[in-house]
Amino acid sequence: MEAPTSPDQIIHDLGGCGRYQIRMNVIVHVIKIVVCWSASAMVIVSATPNWWCNDDVVLNELNMTSCRSVENGSEVIACPMKSCFAINETKCSSFAFAPGMNTIVSEFELVCGKSYIPSTVMSVQVGGTLAGNIMAGQIADLIGRKRPFFSSIVTILVFNLIGYFSVNWIMFAVARFFVGIGMGFFLSIQYSLLSEFSLAKWRVWIIGFPSWPIEACIFALVAWLVQDWRYIQLIIAILSVPCLVAWFYIPESFRWYIAHDRPDDAEKIIKQVADYNKRELTDISHHLENQKDTKDRKYTFLDLFKSRQLIRITLLSTLNWIGLGLVSYGISFGVQSLSGNLYLNFFLFSLTGVPSKTIALWLQNRFGRKKTTILCYTCVAIGGFVVGIVQTIDAPHKDEITNAFALVANIGIYTAWGPVQLMTIELYPTVIRTIGFGSLSVMARIGAMVGPQLVYLNMFVPGLLYYVCGAVAILSILACLGLPETMNANLSDKISDARGKMTLQEK
Image 1 (tube, rainbow, N blue to C red):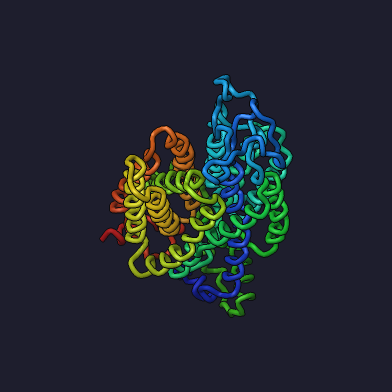
Image 2: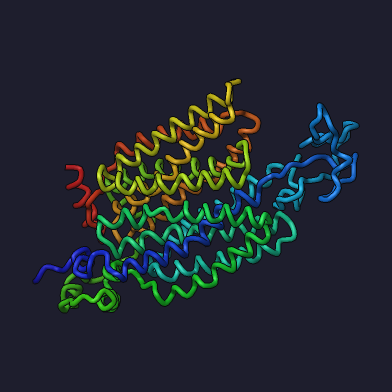
């Protein structure tokens, strides 16, 4: 029997990274804007504007004169800021908020006894993303990548629209949970789908291209112009509508068809790619038939522990992914507490991701995914511990040092997403790739649920958030040391292929 043509050889014959693959990647990275903005929105819409007890004076957005006084030639706010008690020491019954920024905090008065709610809603959204990761990983390996991928866009559209009409914070939190589910589906599937049409040297660009920080920078500008939590959600819902047109341009993964013994369907996709790339392919149907097993089996989460190599990879990767979620969401949500303008800080923190992720593209192809990840987590550890120390002592230029090293930690974790995600995709075979990616994404969401709570606790224990981020980064570095390098490795399709590949890598 003639040896079967490998999917990687088919991709090479299709042009490697031809016009079809470029079009796919551009479309998916553009669609990602609704996911990025949905995730970033919580940093802005849950921010707390300046506020004060409104029991003693009558304030509105146009008349604040009763709260103003002049001291030493400078105008100051005379009313107690951010106090839960009136001047006569009685508990405050109503609050006034500084004009300009309209968030869920100002709309639903989420201060004092309700101050825990904004971070809780953030964790609720992350919980939805976690649920989406769990479902998407299994569903995408059972029925394919395309249908759950586009169901994520529909979910984000519908529930951002419902969030726009929220009449209380509970309704808003429920809407954000389902927005999180849509995000979980998208994030679990996007890179697997794109990587299964590419060769090893191009996967770094697919996953590492800094589309997320670029889109986050644009979001910071839009949020600054709008400054209203309802309209931010409405804009995201409107942007989701044209994304659905991509259904006609994004195919099912032909590797998924091959891995699940459907060579006829795989051949149709391959011919589409070949035609668009203007490539002439010889008849490959008999090669695909030679790969067919007697029976297609269904894979589950338990297959991630099918061998000692898979057990090791799954457990060590879990630490890396927990670090991604906890540090990323902790630092991004913690931007609210940094000195300076919220919108500018968010823009600058997002902007740092563009050059850092671009540099990471070169690092991953030059030194490998593993060393790049270790370097990134080292930056997180240094930034985290320095900020933690500074916040616990009375240091000169405390705010400047805090912002600078928080930025260092942010650069590190922003950059780490690329190599960690790429290693995960390259280590798992096609039949369990989205199960593995989705399951590990769940670990990231568990970490992400803890991150906002650490921000809340950091108000009572200064430095706690950043000490934890530094410690988690150290654990992630240790986990990386036990993982195999995947640079220049072809993707495996069956579990038996993956075992052989990992054995060779270890040697």
